[in-house]
Amino acid sequence: MIQDLKAALLVGGLGTRLRPVVPDTPKVLASVGNSSFLELLIEQLRCQGIRHLVMCSGHLANEIETQFGNGHAWNVSIEYSKEEQPLGTGGALKRAEKYLGNASAFVVMNGDSFLEVDFSGLIDFHRRHRGIATMAVHRVEDTSRYGTVDIDANGRVKVFAEKTGEAVPGLINGGIYIFTQAVFQHIPEHPASLERDVFPHLLEHGVYAQEQRGLFIDIGTPADYARAQQLSDSLKAAAKG
Image (cartoon, rainbow, N blue to C red; front, side, top):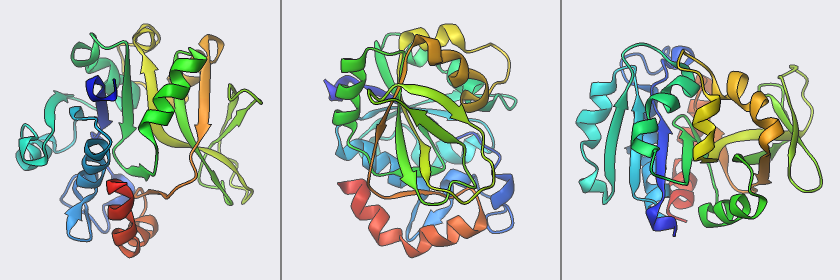
């Protein structure tokens, strides 16, 4: 049941590129319209029935905890897995294992990107394919800023290609994953990146991808953050489904 799933949100990033426009606030608390970006993600999860959340926090973690507390004001429950030093996305997830260790499968989301996604459909896809991981992917016309994902006819990921800087179309990682419990065996104790250090080693265990065709944006750069402001009403509507 989707109501029993937990979701880990990776919200500990330094947000270095965004500091010229968001200098003193965690990137995930940057305002989009009249709410924070993180509120959009919480709303998206809650509206689709996922209400058990784990915040993998780090940089300015206390500000996030002060704003969201135990989550009851948003009709969710929130636990915090706080890193004392930067661990990267992989290390942050590994640190949160004790909060996710009783779940056969769980959701992981990047805290600085939004992808319109059907979580029930993604989870069903994951269970049908029986891989160690499933990622939501999104097709863009210009992949120059992103690494790309190459999949076969069955949706199995064949290779992750590093970004080339070329403005060509392709599938990119949408920053939303379903993992099985076995993933923790493949994440090192030291700082690591899910994208660079973990996913390439998971391919032999079965990583699958399902394309999502809705709204996608990340707020990692001032230009994309400005675009998020322009799309704030659309983002809120997409979050509510």
